Image (cartoon, rainbow, N blue to C red; front, side):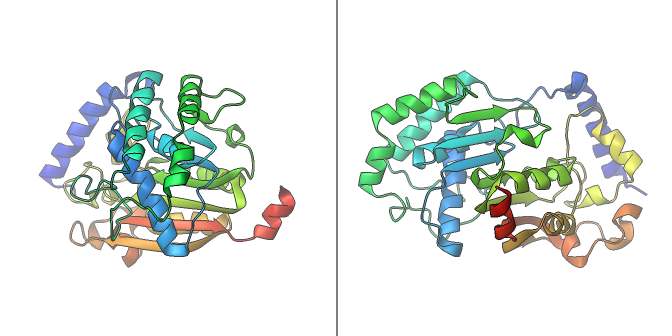
Length: 326
């Protein structure tokens, strides 16, 4: 049985999703990437973390992001730091050119000023966490930044933002996307998703697509949030609902959360022959107990039941096969 407070939450979601989900579109943004400082923080945290974990020094040439949200700002940070091309794929289109240009100009200023990475006080929910949020001078020499932030290069990127998806451009945006062919096979050096894969309905499609896109020596980073996203009183209460109740909660919303636990993502990694090279689990206890789990979730592992979030880094396992295929 679902308690009274949970029932009230379900009712709220039913009413909300029948309003914002009308005609298959949400009427609000996703939050987060409408802030230049947020986008700058996300990108710089990934660069610093990858450098610390396995010594990545070179800025990836081709970057792809799944689920950019309100702007393409994190990709703009990638381009300003030295990337040549940025692919962005989303389910619903939230961003527009005017907003993107504004975010871009603000990120340019952050790089020009060598701003420290916005830390946990400003953005406590952003992962990965860092030991130091100082500007990473060890990754960006003054001479390198001078080249990357030249007037001509900034002007060219701004022009590409204004003409997204042009054949010779650097910015590509596909929303919605449902076909892996939008990104050239084995062309991506670095692919990331920031609290997005928990919202994907067809996880096998996404993992198989990432496999097709990634270069033989490319890297993927996924930050995944397994919490209930406000659909229940308890942080893990979404695993209490039957499929029928969950269908009612989702209503007409184009997406919600997929309720897939950590073990399902690890299964997808194995099935697509990725090699997991780093995993940091965020543990959280309390919430609903095993006896309250819905039938389809009765076999959750103890790790699943206590994992509220995870930071994954993975690569292609059979690099020789990928090289031959490309």
